[in-house]
Image 1 (cartoon, rainbow, N blue to C red):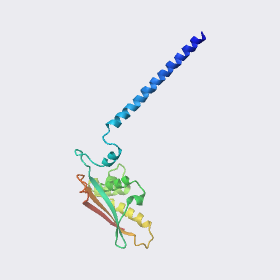
Image 2 (image 1 turned 120 degrees about the horizontal axis):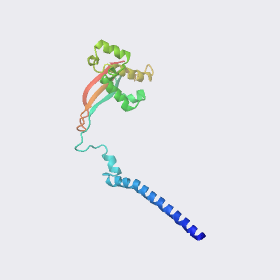
Image 3 (image 1 turned 90 degrees about the vertical axis):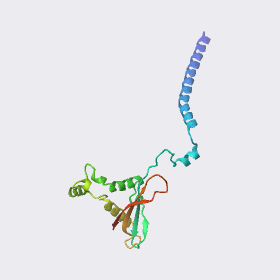
Image 4 (image 1 turned 180 degrees about the vertical axis):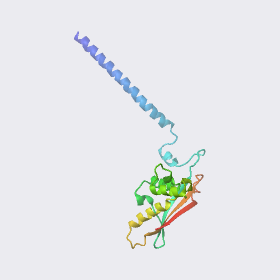
Length: 188
């Protein structure tokens, strides 16, 4: 009789183990089959996909846009490239977003504009009458002041002017990226 109960316990244990085994097999397949499908259906494997990442298909439209180059004119007469990210320690995308917003006068369209912007809006008679990039000289002056504050007073590398050049890239080919649009310049 003891052998019968021992045999029933072993069959219960083996049935339980089979149920767990089936559950784990089903779970493994549920996770593995989609991964296998993704691997099989991928068009390019690693080295190829990394090199084709920047290419655009024939039917896809390349996005162009306006980009900006910040330069400074030193006291000694030299023109140097300025890196806005080094001046303000901000994220690159946010800096150029700030420049674009300044060029579009976006600071005048917020619900609660700065008091000086509100005063300019009142004098101009509305946002549509505010000159384009009305606050750009302030932004350039701030960048020039930051740059000059890091140099000794007698340095010939100090800036006498800051210039921001805007260029347009239409996005059709990689050769037409340098079409000049406009320049903002401020004396320090």
